[in-house]
Length: 425
Image (cartoon, rainbow, N blue to C red; front, top):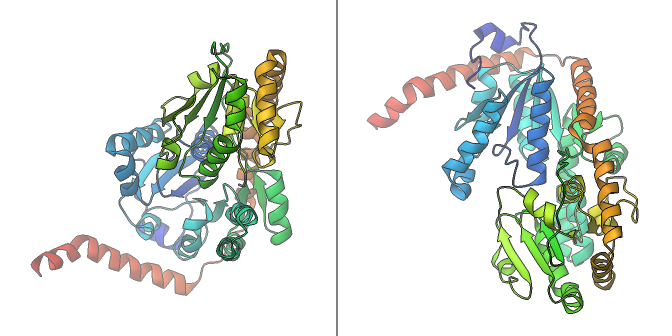
């Protein structure tokens, strides 16, 4: 997992190529937590596909101590070892400049615009030859704008507009931007004409084991509660729609699965509702649930909970926000309802109609396999790599070279001598 660390001073300082295969540096706050959130599943899958295609990958986790505080060192080690299992070199407990100074990269891949906002400039200085890819994951300003439209609060509108300005400026400074949906790619193409944009959607395993429904009517919600739309959606559904469902089917149960449920979510555990928190494997719950619900009132990007359930053959009921980005046909691949009464009525319809549940489940699984399986998305990722490889080299400058030399001397001094001076003081 350690990989090759050293290249010559001239190679590292002036970017002299050694003609190796593409080497990617992934920049994230933590290692992909592939069993906790859909964005993490997708990121781990992207790394896995790049490794399968023969590319070298390093993964820099800039805030690993935060993850250890919330999850514990053993859990973080599990995610680290999963990357090592792919042959990925992991980097942590060091600065971004130190990472860029130590090894040449052909492409630097930022997850979300937040680290790229300050990181793009550092890459341009330290490795001007490297192509910069920024993965939007979802358009944050679009998600915040949808929240503002729901709340009608001036403060929410201000946050959305400020985020829009910062986010678009960051994308404009990159070489390639990734979106998760075609719709968001069109939005960015309108905002930033000429910017290379690639769609890399969510990626799903397709389990083909037989489903066996619970003996009682059951709903399942899956989603990490660090994501605000999940908190809002569950509260809305339980308060506005669940009472009608529970009245019609007193034996029905709603299972709420997802890490970090706040107190207001935990307090829902009554009247047929189970709040289970994080579970290491969601598949057993998917395989026995009658219906998967995604009652999202705002958001952006592609909803992993929807694709995950469809991949497992579970019929899905969601809102327009939950269905966006997939290219799905309501009534054929899933059901869509946007107000509480319609949502509750749709649940009751599905509970009463097993044939409809089976038809939606099979159609959904076929759709996901055709469009969002590893095989389908692997081809898209190959096109992205071709684009990155074909981008022209950006010119280096004497000023950048001199800066790199000076910073290397400074970094070496602090690494080898600075601690002694500090200790003596």
